[in-house]
Amino acid sequence: LFSFLVFLRYQIYYDYPLQTYLEYPIIIAQDVILLLLILRYSGNMKRALFYAVTFWGGWYLLTLRKWIIDLAMNLCTFISAASKLTQLRCLWQTKDSGQVSALTWSMSAYTCATRIVTTVMTTNDL
Image (tube, rainbow, N blue to C red; front, side, top):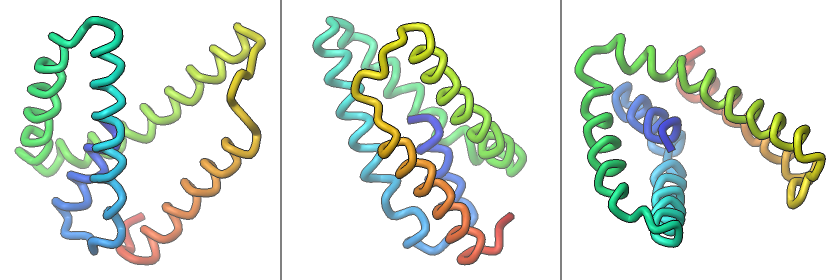
């Protein structure tokens, strides 16, 4: 969720064309709903306010200085890679791929690669 918020804020900050980030608000809404459901059914609904204040404050903190939004954007790549490595480590330890499929991961990799290419072509932001 943090990465999606940073991506959205970065693209709004630099006035990118709407079609390059239009899906982020939908993805963020889906993640927020999922997070609320997880908190609700795990009995931690009181934490929802903490997360809301944290993300809302982060939204404004990101654009206080240009270097903050640029640093956050660069850290998102690290965070995204770290989350994938954590998922792979968990799969390796449990020896159970469960609902993970090669097709799903391939589609995700293709989508990420396509996003990079289309963003570079649309905005010239390497």
